Image (cartoon, rainbow, N blue to C red; front, side, top):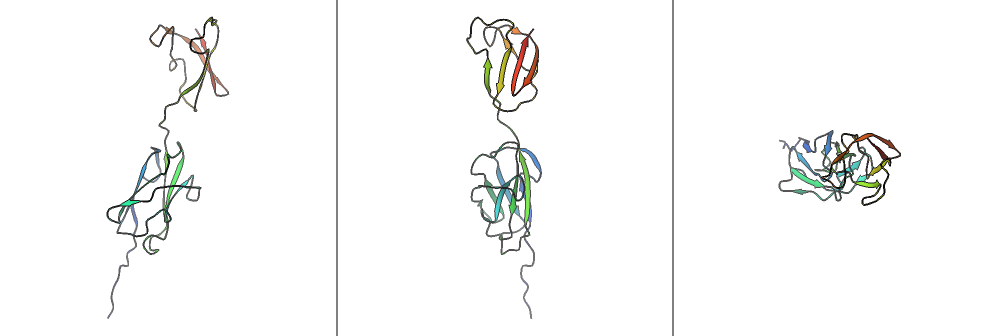
Length: 178
């Protein structure tokens, strides 16, 4: 006589965000679904790492679950933009039967840039018509051109002033009026 037991090993059935997904919201809730009920799913056995499977550990919330198959985690704080993160599932889940597994994703950048500096300053008077307009953004941006930067005379709805060129030097843009 003999008795059979559970000889199947639990597997990670799905992970959200998907492995190698890009432009993921940096306030994401991560979802893990296992192939069968598992135990010991916690922040010791599931970790989030910055950059790679072995990168610095990022704090995540304790998981929530209703059925010991489907678990939800979140970052304890907003994740960095444009950064790769890897969720690593350790062997401590379900009596060490789960083979170590990881899934990586990259966050996107969803925050609009802010203008940190403009010269001449708003309201400044007696500005020469040949003065260069200088401006600086709070983060790196792309697509800055004479067609994407619009200058109005007097107010935001005033007559449009044409720019002949825009150049970038040391994070500061410089525009020349036409």
